[in-house]
Image (tube, rainbow, N blue to C red; front, side, top):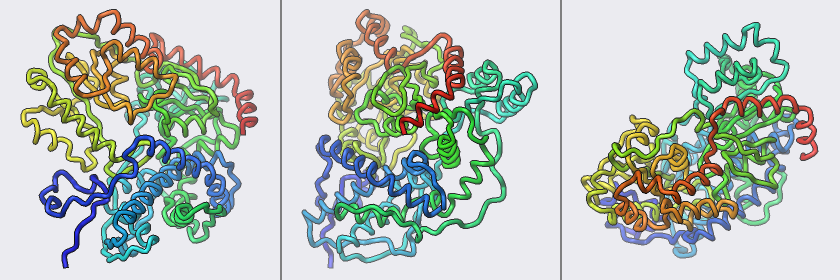
Length: 581
C-alpha cells in the first residue's frame, strides 16, 4: 500500500533530485523557526540549558577520569560541542514534535542500532551533523522516544574529513623558527613566553614577532605528536550526569549526551592528553589563539589545563561579523574562556575577558587596493549554510529565503551588469545545489573557481558585491575595494553599539536591505571611481573600518608591545583571573 509522504522541511527536497520527489506531494511540516524571533528565543533557551548543565557535565567527566579540573577547564574542552549538541537536539526535537502535531499518525524509517556511530571528536561531530545519515540517527532516537512506529535499515554513517585550520606555517618556515628558537641569542629571554596558535598572523609576521620578542612570542605546532598511543580508556557507561531534567526534552538530552558525547572526551581523553603533553610546553605564561578553541582537541586540553595552573589565555576574533551580530555564539564562548580578547576595533563590556581593540591579525600587511578605472568585472561573493540546522539563532529556513534573494538580485540586475558578473560560491555547497539553481535561471552566468585566491580576485574586479554579513565584505572594505552589500536585516540582527556604523554604510549607498535596491544601485553607478571616492562614501568606510577592520602601519610593533605588556603584567593578570572565578 502506498502512503502519502511527509517532508520534515524544504531542506529534505534536494533541488538536484526534484524529479524523484516532485510526484510525492507537497506535505511539508511548517518550520518552527520561520519567524526570526522564534529562532532568537530558541537560542536563549539553549544557552540557559547549557549554562545550567555545564557544571553537572564537568562533575561527571571529572568523576569518570578521576580528575578535579575546574568548570572553566571543561567549558574550554567540552563546551563548544555541548552547546552545539544541545541546540541541534533541541531543533530536531522541536521539528519532530511539530510534525506529530500536524500528522499524529506518522510512521517512519530509522537507523538500526548496529549502524549507530559516536563522533571521534568535535570536528568529526561537525562533519557528521552536516550529513543525512547521522541526522537520521538522531531522528531515530527522537522518533523512538515519541513512540512513532519505525522500520529499520542499516546505513554507513560517516562525515567528510575535517582538519583544524592551519597555522599558516610552511615546513620551511617551521625549520627556520626551530633554529631561531634554539639560538643562544634568544634563549636567555625565554623565562616568560606567549605561545601563539592559529592567530591569523602571517608566517612573516610570526617570524618578526619571534625575533622582536627575543623568543618570547613562540608559534606552536613545532613538535610532532607521539607515534605510540595509549589504549582504550574510560567507559561511557560509567558517565553519570547528576542533573535534574526539567522537562521531557532535558530527560532525552541527558541520555543523549551520555550516548553521543565524542570519544575524545571519554574513551580517548587520556590519549588526547598524552598528545597535548608531547606537543606543547607545560603551562607557559600566556597562550594566544583565534580559532583553536573549537576543534583542536590537544590544544584545548593544553590551554585549559594551563589556565587552571595560572596561564593567561588570550583570544582574538576570526570572523568579520564579530562585534556586529547580536547574539554571536562563538564570540560569547571565546570571551567567556579568555582573559584578554583582541577585537578588530570594537569594544564590549560585561564579559569575563577584557576586550581590547587591536589591528586585525588577518588584515596585517595587506595592501590597499582602492578604486581603479582600468579594472573590469563585478565579483559577486556568496555563502552557504548546512541544510541541517547547526546553531541558533540561525535557522535552516532562512537559507531558503537567502537563495530566493539571490534569484531576485540577478533577475533585477541589468543585462549588461549581469554579463560582467562572476559568482564566487562558498567552497562547500552542503547539498543546496546553488550553482545548478542559478544556472537553470541564468544560463550565461559565470562562476569563479577557488583556485583563484580571494584577494587576487578582489584586486582584479571593479566592483565587489556581497549578499551576506560575514568576513569577506570586511576584507573588501579594509582593502578599500568599491563594494555593494545587501542582506536580510531580520536574520542579521545588529547589536545597538554597531547600528550607527552600519547606518552610515546605508546612507552612503554601500549597504542595502533588499536585493532589488542593491541591483538598482549597481545599475546607477556609471563611474565607480568617482562614486567610491565621494566624501560620504569615504567617511562611511573609514568609520566602519576603524570599528570593525582596524589596520595599522606598524602592526608588528603594536602587537609586540601588547604581548610584552601581557608578559610584564602576568602576575597581576593571574590574580585578576582568579578573582573572577
